[in-house]
Structure formats: C-alpha cells, structure tokens
Amino acid sequence: MGMTIKIEIADKNVNEKVFNKIFAYFDEIDRRFSTYKEDSEISKINRGELKEENWSKEMKEVFELSEKTKKETNGYFDIKKPNGKYDTSGLVKGWAIWEAANILKTNGFSNFYVDAGGDIQAFGKNEKNEPWSIGIRNPFRPEEIIKKIILKDKGVATSGTYVRGQHIYNPKKPNETIDDIVSLTVIGPNIYEADRFATAAFAMGEKGIYFIEQLPDFEGYMIDKNGIAKMTTGFERHTIKDY
Image (cartoon, rainbow, N blue to C red):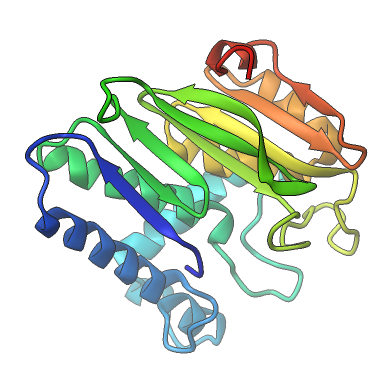
C-alpha cells in the first residue's frame, strides 16, 4: 500500500512465523486493493474487466462498508472518485490493520500493536508492562511530536495533507482543495472505525472536529492551516500530561 508497516508484539511466545503471516496478509491486501498495480482486483474493476458477481469476498465487504460509511457521514466519504473510478484507500487501510490484529488475537497474542503508515491498532501493554504510547506529529515539522497519547485496546488514525499532499477530497465539492486544516487525528474503539471517520471528518474541513465530537466513543485532535489546534472534550483523557 506504499507505506511502512510495523508490528510489535510484547508477548513471550512470539516467533518469526507469526510476523511472516501478518506481512503476507498485507501483501495480499496490497495486491487486491492497490490502485497503483495494473493487475490488482480494484484496477480490473475500474477498467470494467471484472463483473461484481466475480469480485472477491474481501472486495464485496469493503464496498459494503464504504457504502455504510457514506451514509453515516452524509456523503462526506465516497470511494467513487470524480473520474468514475473507485479508490478504497480511505477505509481499506484501517480495515486491513484491524483484520491483521484479529489474526494476532486468534493466534493467542494479547499485547501488541500494528502500525500501517501511522494508523495504529493497539492491544494490551508493551514490553515494560505499560500502556502503548503514540506520538502525534507536528504537521509543519513532522520530526516534532506535539502530543503523546495512551492507547489501550483502541485505534488511532490521522488524516492530513502534510505527507502525501492533497490526496483527500470533499465529495460535495470535488474540484476544491481542502486547505483550511492540515491534520486530524481520531481515536476510536478500533482502527477501522477511527480510520474511516478520520477520512470523512477531514473531508469536512474545519467542521470535521465537531462531527467527531458527536460520535460516541470517539475523540479527535485537529490542526488548522494556522497551526491552531482544536480537540474534542474527552481527548485530553487519552494524553500523557505535561508533554
């Protein structure tokens, strides 16, 4: 998926075999959903070479989840782009991380995190028997961490333009760039939920943080073009104080 994938497992019974299994899973997801690969399933769908009845189970599931998200966000999430082609990247990364985490749980692991491109699912505790801590980067100086959050049995996803440029669009105004905000981080009950709503909320621009505010069990942290941060009322509960 064109991004770094990191896995850390703090359980004692860890072995190389389980890492290979997870990375093989991500390879399969990339081969299926990458819009950059000519022979991927999504590329064949976009070229009209694959009829819906012949889509994989995974593809059908992602399309169904995408339609559900579109309805839940009042159309601010849409995998159908202005050119008529489909791009599932606003949801499939979080979905894949969540599925990978479930593979680890099924294999008996309970203390780990899975990180794909900075979107993270964490369970249990780290090797120091402490909750996992995650840094939020300054979008204007990515080498600087401006907030640290505690993540236990939750997911965190960040949508922004400071790494990949203008790759998120507002389906209601597809010809306009989103330039009033530069970063929006969402903490959710799992990474799939956090990722899909982070994408949609970013597409809303400055009002996206208010959308996250009204979602039960979600918190958000937004930085606008002037470097001013806004956060939901419960976000500070997840932060490391005095950082």
